[in-house]
Image (cartoon, rainbow, N blue to C red; front, side):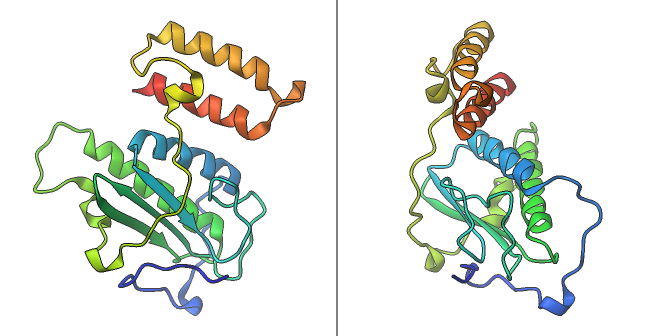
Amino acid sequence: MSLDWPTGFDRTPPVERNPNRHFRASIANTTEELETELYRLDPDEWRADIGNQHTKSNGLPQHNANPDDPGFVLRWRKDGEEFAVACDAYTRLRDNLRTVYFWVHETRMRNQRPVETGEDEFAAARLPPGDEEAIAVAPTPEPHEILEVAPDAPEAVVRGAARSLKAEHHPDRGGDVEQFKRIVEAEEALLDD
């Protein structure tokens, strides 16, 4: 399986890719953080792409992914527009994934500042109409849906629902690790809003 690189995006030649000694986060930590950013970004749909089959059910790389092509692509659709962010500047998937996460996080945060600009901060990631592809992923449930609370639930209700669900799905008690992570991320997303 080859990496589905966006049309018109330049690739870094393999001999020009550099090792990165600045990022210490693992693939697992970065995918968790990127999922949280995606919850907050609230796209209509999204998908991630790497150069092999080592992906989680949600489309993000597993902790042990080590493809020959270390590039990482994140695509999403929001309000009828297509966006993509891609990185292959580093020799390891972990570092390219981390770079995309930082870009999405920093751009989303800039978009929340009360300043006026000519366009939305994510305009740089907007794909031209000719590159639109069907993004085949299951819709990501909203954080309030995961916690089974109202979208505007008070903090105490969010914390209580999360506490109950974390106890029910805790891996030390035989619960599903991925479900537990989704609950934690949903709680963080609702409390950060």
